[in-house]
Amino acid sequence: MRVENLDPSTMEVVERMFQALFDDLSSEKSQEQAGWRSCNEFGISPVTQTGLLRAEISEKNLRDEVRLNFRDYRIRRQLRKTFEVQVAQLEYLLEIQRDNITVRKAQKVLGQISAVVQQSSESWANLIALGWWKMLETSGMPALINDVLSEGFSPENWTVKAVRSCPQLALGVAQRWGKVSQFNDAIAFLEKTEIYIADPIALPPLPSQEDVNKVEKILKWTEVEEKLTECSVKALAFSWFAFLVLEHANLLPYSTEYSVRLFDNIWSDLQKLLEKNQQDILRELESLLGTLTEKGIAWAPDILRFPEVIS
Image (cartoon, rainbow, N blue to C red; front, side, top):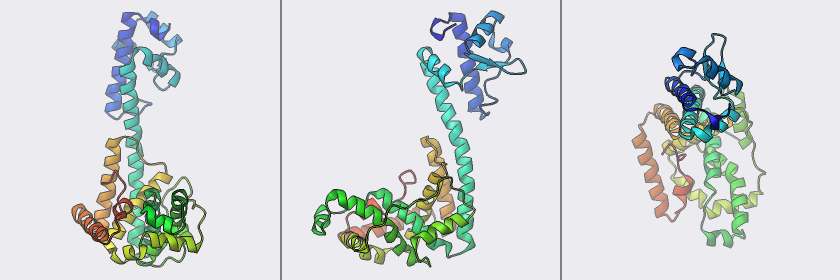
């Protein structure tokens, strides 16, 4: 029995098997439990049952219940030729279920992060160093091309040197709000906490201090630092630190629905920690960016921003 050669009655059986999976997965049954029904519920004759099992299109459990063999990718690929819409819906539901589990785990990690921050005010300095590093690094460090060239960088070389300077720039911000001597101290701090990460955090090769000084000059970093407010610094730091940790813990969801749900959780924790609501936090950052833009630092909004999903 081949999928493309199924007779109409067998195709109806397969469609009912798909529907059973849709119903169970939508009600948040686990993959192990989803889709199982008796042969009578599916209206399967003994001959059809034997054919489906032999072709591995269906599978049977110890209670003599059957279901579609949906976790076998080879079978899903065969079914896609005839049941394209159903397979697409099934894979969407499987992704949603994976994301649901992922976000539940991520919520526990967010709780650990909040607990660490609340335990000691000095925790903020380490969190700022790591969070701002992630924010700066992912921005690509945009700057005016004339300023870049005037300091002896090529556009390509600028990107490399600027990104490698991010730990030092982030460290400088962190040192304004707490005690942290070296960037590696912040990494060591994270490793000593109970916050779960699967992959260790590794830094790129550091540039020379001369290059860091040039990067700071091009970005007018001293002027940026002078205008920073505690609320904006901590809000950006917490958001990007959470993103960094969840990324290294493999706990970022794929679907938009669960990404939004996760970042709603991040905002909820952030508002409690800063004792300010989201609108006030965003308004303060917007005011800061306006001030920097007026001072000719036009690239500030491309660097000082929340992770995209949060906004």
